Structures are given as structure tokens and as C-alpha cells.
Image 1 (cartoon, rainbow, N blue to C red):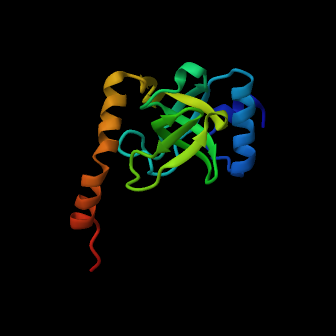
Image 2 (cartoon, rainbow, N blue to C red):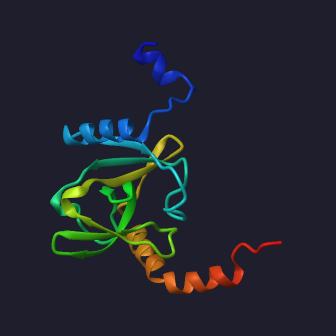
Length: 156
């Protein structure tokens, strides 16, 4: 299959994560922006499973609270939000996670999220209003845990 046909086909190509992220890392290392499909629900409500996120190689100036970053963690390659920073370390959490926080060395961060594709256009996710809302959502975690315990999925 040639490249033009591959880009227009609706078939899904399944690639092992290790291979997929090796290519992502190489493209970022070469200075390229990359479109990354969001997989999972850890970033809900701000990013959803199936969203297409435009990421760019991380720069020193990108290490700020509220930024969505792609990093190599002890749990694997994760796309989460920076919720705290201490010298050479960042602390990341998924917007939808109620408990887990990952501690990651800045050297292990590969990219920062720029925009999410909506239809045929990209919506900037680096706007102050979105980052501030996401950090407020993070700070509300204790209340979200209580609400989840009270009103979460109930067994029948």
C-alpha cells in the first residue's frame, strides 16, 4: 500500500505500544509536531478517548502548571497534566483520576499538548481559561472523591 492510499483508508492499523512510541519519540526528537490519538479516560473531562491531540517537542518554557505533557514514567508513556513542580521534577495527574499522581524527572518529558482536533479544526488547549479550569478540577479532587463514593456506580 502506498502512502497516499494509506492516508485515505479507513482501516485501523494496530502497532505495539513500544513501536508506536519509539516512532513518536523519534519524530519529536527531530523537532516535528505529532498528532497523537488519546486513548483511555484518565483525562476526562478535558480530553476524551479518541480525541486527536497535537503535541510538540517539550521546551524549557513549557514546564508550567496546567500544561498537558507526554512523559515516560514508571507506569509507561503517559499523557497527563502538570499539577506541581519541584526543581527537576514534575508531578502529573490525569484530569479524571481521583488518586494517582506520577512523579517524573523533567528529562523524561517528551512533549507538550498544543491543541485538540474538533472536526476539521484544532482547539487550543494552552489557553489560560482551560488550564485554570483543569487545575481547579484537580484541587477539587477531595470533594470529587466524596461525591464518587456517595453517588458513584452502585452495584445491583
